[in-house]
Length: 255
Length: 262
Image (cartoon, rainbow over all chains, first blue to last red; front, side):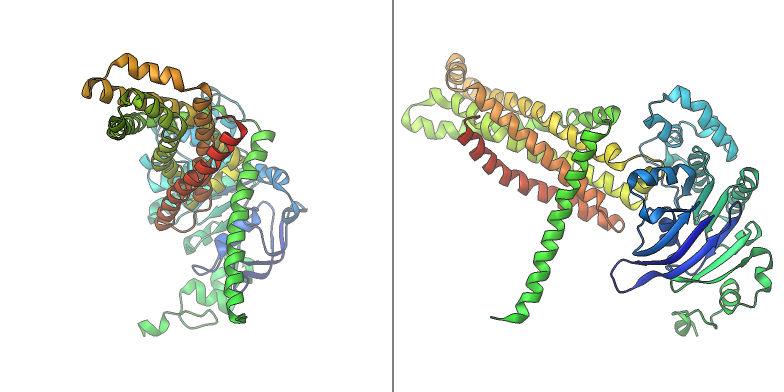
């Protein structure tokens, strides 16, 4: 289980991106964090994996407080927690084969030795290996890049995967393919998944939903009943209403 | 005492101290990784090629034209005293002790230092460096140390090449344009240029290699924002590295001279 306790993060000492945030993310389930743009969802996700150090508070992954770990200690966390970046973050100068197998290449394995493993991971994300293996990221479509990013994450057989807006910039059909892929991996491998997303379509595929607003979680509940929720934050956010507890700065301009 | 001035002055001092501290800490981290982790040999060779081999054309052109110009200027002065036979000596000394290492450092800063800052800066803003960390790959081991080591190792070779091109440029001017006796040009060099002149130039060039890669990787690694941030990092790395090379050149010349190394 991932436990977040009293998490605070500020970059300038004045404005808090996360402000006394506490959250429990259940093991083996898919939890989606929703919230407005600029609310700090990606910063929260990066704090969960230790890519950004919190100002104060604690994050426990399998009862290990990652905020107290040094760089060496964090390596154990990275081995069991994967991260799928918003724009895949594939290394431009490497082919798909090298990108996915990079961690094994750095351990001294040859390209020939890693190729079958990479091909297996590409197949798992519904890509045909021979079509993409020797291509560079710039030669792939947005959807393919995201799937290659997921394949790279799956290389370490993680028990937890964090997805940062996995369908941003994708058309609805490709977004659905990515959602279904995430869902099938989660069910098949019993991976704990945390997804940051704006896309309400993802509600069909996740178990829990957490709504982030002004640095703290205003709602945490079952995704299946989200549309029946009477939580005012959830009610306003998922329907895109301008009236409600969530302040919408541009309302006045469009009235 | 004007007290209101103290606060902004203090802020400036603190911000300079912060930048200097983070700049030195960055090199300290790279040195720690260099001595405690395995050197990434494929990356080292790749960057030796990118910084060194790919710079040969511009080093050839700058070295040759510097030698030609130095021979021309020296000839104007020396012909007034009738000591043209020493042109070769002056060209060789100037190139081995000063112009060779400095010109090489500045040209490689413009070509490779800027590319290092731009490449690492782009990787930084597109989360590629974070991706390396999640793959349990130390970004310093994979990105920073190979580039710094490549700069330190390859600059002396480029500098030797620059010296040879410059001396050849001086030879072309003296022998083919001025009709000077080739033996007189060469014997002047053989007679007065010592090994320590070349060694001093090579030590300097290694330090310049460290400076240009250190500044380039630091600015790239600290890049914030989008394309504008990459542009700022690239420009800053070229300007800062060029200034540091020129300042370091004086202190290195003085140090090498006083210690008798050069």
